[in-house]
Image (cartoon, rainbow, N blue to C red; front, side):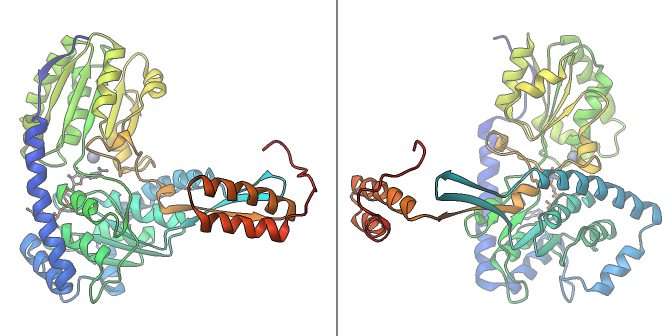
Length: 436
Ligand SMILES: NC(=O)c1ccc[n+]([C@@H]2O[C@H](COP(=O)([O-])OP(=O)(O)OC[C@H]3O[C@@H](n4cnc5c(N)ncnc54)[C@H](O)[C@@H]3O)[C@@H](O)[C@H]2O)c1
Ligand SMILES: [Zn+2]
């Protein structure tokens, strides 16, 4: 395998050091929120966001006043995006069926999909007010039928952001709080004097938010590890450097720590893309963040073959993977680890982020090896049940249950089977069932 790095990002070691600093900050803050509740939440909101309103929860009047600040065009655009997200989420919901089957005569097994009863949706807003994140979490929870949806977003430039609040409200949030970072997810998960705790936290965020969710997992459920955005472009010589550079910087602008990786079989494209990125960074208004991400985390990887590109891509397991090659469907069939795929030059990651209807809350830091992104199914818990409808089945399964329990030394378990055999079994009546 001949893989050449034309540019490399920070080493795993350096990334681990960043992680351990974040971990310590989050641990201390969560402990304080657990101990001091609202007082700690307010203190963190002041120190991290310089924000201390009378109440962090917005009233209906405040929500209405914020929505009134938006133009009709802006409201229509939000409605359009939400219609696309809803359409896809409803189709996905329909793919999940409750089932009930008779696995042996008289043995009925089933499962029911039950919505999580309360969720806390984090909508990021430190650097950019992420209107779209409200559709992704709040609206998807609503499609799943979650009866209590709490939404938090930080103040943006010292104020609640009208676009984010409108999107939360239109998506169906029942409670909206202007709180950011650790204090938001901590308050929602742990509860305070004024905020009733939720059962599950969802939504993306910066490294502090993602780490806080990770630490709170267990106390509450979480959707997935969805930290700072990552993007990868897989390209051969069917595309040009302008498209590749635009797609790499389009996601590097998220923050100072967003990896953007080009994997290509074309040295000419790789070199042209490096030059094009340098040129775009002189004119992109968000170059201040994008250039730091590119400097510290940008990578350009040159491979000999598509098989090599596939192996590299599955290993990196990037959150977003934009594929622009002469065989995009081959990647769709063979990629196994990623957040979401964007196939062909006509679409792009920003479509997925903002409007097309797939969910943009996606796994980062290789979490794509064990989970896909947020979707309606993450808000549904699949619970099994069983029922035995005949005496014969009760005695037949009971006898197996008894012997298998004794194999493990569980006498009390065996007795649960034995009592059914004694009560429902009839001697010498052969079990009339099909093959076990
Ligand atoms: N994985 C995904 O699906 C996905 C999707 C969208 C966005 N994102 C990511 O979400 C992130 C949004 O980040 P953001 O910062 O703009 O907004 P954010 O809302 O996630 O975080 C802002 C909050 O961080 C807290 N904070 C800032 N500095 C801190 C510090 N030093 N210590 C403790 N807390 C601190 C503040 O309380 C602030 O309110 C980006 O990294 C973006 O890439 C990920
Ligand atoms: Zn993005």
